[in-house]
Image (cartoon, rainbow, N blue to C red):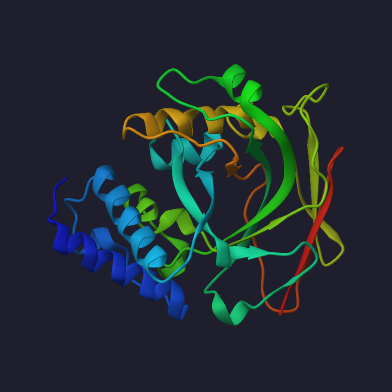
Length: 262
């Protein structure tokens, strides 16, 4: 790392306060251009500690920048990873208060729930599928704390990969007989189709994002525990939303996920 623990804590407070107060801030690398990716994850870990100290629990894990186009744009070869907390969970069909957010966008995703732990290095799609209990349809609401939703790689990792809210569908299915690569999804905003995708939009297979998360954690001496809920990353593009909008995503073989923004 290139910064001291005091600076890590200060930047964690800066970013988490922006989230909690729903206000934009300047990206942290403007003032600290020397920051590395390891610094970004250290700041993310400090945000986790702040939330847990207030009684919040980690509800799941997530991958971001999982499309080849996004990775090329950001100049990375592996996705970035973040945390989902209990207060971010919204019931399927529920309301999301835009006053608590800055400039939200929605992405359709396939989420995995594990029946066995996953350990790297060398984790691969086959290992992920063998460890998967079931998959569920999900929508993530991302909300970067940075001005105009503009950031670099280190800044977005430090900002907990723009984590904000998430909605999980009510249909859970084992993966036997399912081809997650071809599983289709259609997003409607206020009744009009705004995005369509298949699971292969995520690194060729959504389980690849989970494998890369396991390998990322292995480098830090960690694993993905059994029972974990993991969002594999946006298959669709991120669609901006505002108060008054309704979103519904229909998933092949997995039902639908919906929400209203108020």
